[in-house]
Structures are given as C-alpha cells and as structure tokens.
Image (cartoon, rainbow, N blue to C red; front, side):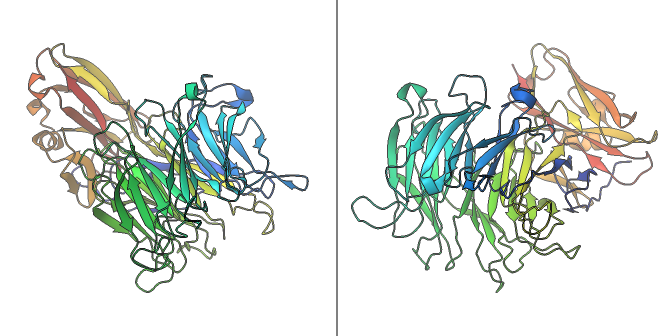
Length: 576
C-alpha cells in the first residue's frame, strides 16, 4: 500500500464543494464559501484584503480573520459613493452592513496593516479612493481613523497601497501610489509614491516622496514590500511603472528601492505595451537564498503571437535575476497576470507559493464567455497546484486576489477571489461577488512545533481525510531538514525532501528513525486518526537546530495502489 500515487485533478469550477487534491505539495483545495454577493451595481470584489479579526456579526470579534471587499460603484440614491463590506473569514457572512465613502472610487484599493496601530485591538487597513486622491486608515468596524489627502489634484493617490517598515522603527509605514503625479520641477506626469510613518506618535506624518523615473510611466501603479536586501535594517520597496518606455514603447518597468531611498535595481519589460509591472507581489523565499522574491505581471503581453494573452515573471528579490516565467493558457485577451498574489508557504514545503489570475480566460469545459480563471503555482518549482475556472460569462473571476493569511482559523493561508462582473439578475446588474478557497491540510497542528533535545517529549498529531469507508488507511512519512530534492512517486510530488528517514518510513522501517512514531500506520475512523512523535531526553541532540518534517498519506483501502490524499507538512523544530 501507499507505494505509488497519481493525482491529476487540476481543473475545478467554483460552486463545487468537493475536495480537490493538490497536484503537488499535499493538502486538498476546497471552496470554503462563495459566491457571496449583494444586490446593487457596486462591483463587489473589484479589490480585496484579507485582514486580522475585525468582527463577527454585530461587531463582536469571532476569532477568525476577515475579508474586506471593495465596492467602488456603490450608490446611495443618485450618489456614487464607493464602499466596502466586511465578511467573516469563516462563513463569508456580512454582519456589519456597508461602510460608504464619499466617492472617487472609494474601495478600489486596500492594504492590510498587519499591526494594531490604533490601539483598539482590531485589525487596521488602508482604503483608497484614487479619483479623489485620498487614502484612509480604517480600524475594525469603527471606520476611518485618519485620512490622507494628496497635495496635487488628479494625481490618483491611492490607486495602489502597501504597508511595510521602510524606516526600521518597528512600525509598518503606510505607502501610497499616485501614478499620475506631476514631477515638481520637470512639469511632466511621471507618478509618485508617498511614504507616511506608521508610528501613531508622529500622527502618521509624511516622511518621504519617491518621484517617477521617466515621463508618463505611471510610476506607483503597483507596490510591493520586500525583505531587507541590503542589510540596513529596513525593508525594501518595489514600484511598478507599467507604461515606462526604457527599451520598448510603454513596455513597463519595475524599480526596487532600498528602504533608505536609493535605487537597488530596475527590471524592464521586453515588449511594447505589455504593461509589465501592472501588478506586483512579494513572495516568501522561492529560490532558497533566504530573501523574499518578486512576482511581476504583464497582463497585456502577447505570447507566441496571441494578442494580450498575458505573462508573469518571477525574479530573485535579492538581485533581480529571472527565476521563471508563466504564460497561463495563452488565449487571446485572457490577460493572465491581471492580479498576482502571495499565498505564503501554503503547503508547508518551505517555498513561497503564489496565485495568478486571468479574469477573461475562457472555460474549456463549457460555453461561458470569458468567465475568468485563477491559477495556483508551487513556489518549489512553478508546477501548477490548482486551476479554478468560473462558470459564469463575463464574471471577471480573479479581477482581485487576496492571500497569505488564514481566514478560517486553521493556520493555513487562504485565497480570496473577487469577481466584480458577477450578476444576480441579468447582464445589467454587475453586483459583484467574492469567494474564499482554502487548502485543507489533513494534519494538525500545522503551526510549527518545538521539541527540546535535552528534555525530550511527546507531541500528538491528528489526521483528517475525507473518507467514510471502514477500510480507509493512513501512513506517516518523515524527513529531516530541507525539503529538496522533493520526491516524486509515479508523477506525484511529495512535499518532503529525499532523505534516509523518508526512505525508511516509506518502507515502514520506523525503528531506523532516531525517535519513536507511535501508531504511524492505521485504519481511519470516519477519516480520522492520530499519531504521536516521542523522543527520550538527549535522543535528538545531534539534530539540534534542524526540523523534522512529517506528512500523512491516505487511501480508501489497504490494497489500493494509489495514494489518494496527502497532507501538508507538519514541522517540528529541534531546540537545545
């Protein structure tokens, strides 16, 4: 049993609640909820942010992360105000109504702050209204705390937002893109980025402006914050300029600046009017150098002669070297790369995973017209983990993505998808909708555990697979330290590195491991069981500073030749 595996379920339609095994890396994808929509031509899902716990129904925190959904065309009467709604990460329910702005496409951009700057114990986030040149800091369900107005009319301040400590003071600074700003001395539209202090004791004062580098390049149309790359104790800032014309007319560019302000390097598009840099995402380390990496979308890139199919490029954050490229399904005007998002390390294999949308991609399994799709890729090698197709024409499924945080409380980062073209009552009503997708880990706890080598100890893990048959079985596999080179068995890539411990556990020679696995093989009861890792005092001393990686695999029968499900990685750090 459990000697081979073949999983091919990659393509999926929203609305199907079945678990879909990830093509690589373990776990199974599930549509947690959605579509969640509300009547009104508001374009819900045009922008999204996964934030910390704001509130459950009635403004009472419920212990789950929440989703903020932009509705930039929300109206009251004849007034177009823009708005957002707050949805429970656990259920998708909006228990708090709608927070309306004052126009200017309020709710077109968001950024989760990730730290409680306002001191009320609730998650804070930024909201942009770029046509008004306004950004607001909001907290929980209490609404606006402070507003920032651009000094320049019509500069589109708030078209892109980001948060990160660029000053080294331990407060996340507030970063606003203004892609039409006019250069103060040259008098031409270049774009600008404003950086405000995140320290509330400074009243969030402006600390820096970064000017565009060339004429009409839309500098500030996208933003991303990277790790400290140059060792000065400050994080770095990536700025997209999708109409820059360095090598080709309006091919686009991305500039990476030190937190101290100096330009570290520039990336350039390689095709005219490709909109390279229209979208950006900072990823957890992909190439193993210990630094975050950078994903760049060029949604208007022609690919192999196909008009505006779209392209996404992954670069080393450290030096800007190209790591890989993706082209999606390569259809005309699919606009692959219209949104890109970090999923953090969703499957626990040690690499940053990521999602890319093509909001006008055709569905090959139906007659729907350009409904849109979202592609999820493994950071380990770029292999597709999942492709989700919409089944509603012109839904613009994937126009916005939000990930990298757990909204459903299981510690595994989730993926929210916006579909602003979703219609409840016909083509004249672009109500919009939001969805939440999650990777079921099949093992818990997923949160990294710690075991003292000198003291020893016992850790318990639980497994949970979607089986009801009394014949279903599971087996635990172990490996040490790194997760590369990953082991592929009959086409399935386990999220574990090749190691003598893995080879021993695959053959059930658990006595060869320097620790005890208690009940590592067994029958599942309604899909569930548990096992323990136990070490005597001093037993793990030679491996202090390293990590034990564990996965559980399962099949519906002990005589099955297939691994039908595999968990994500559960890790145990060995400390002195």
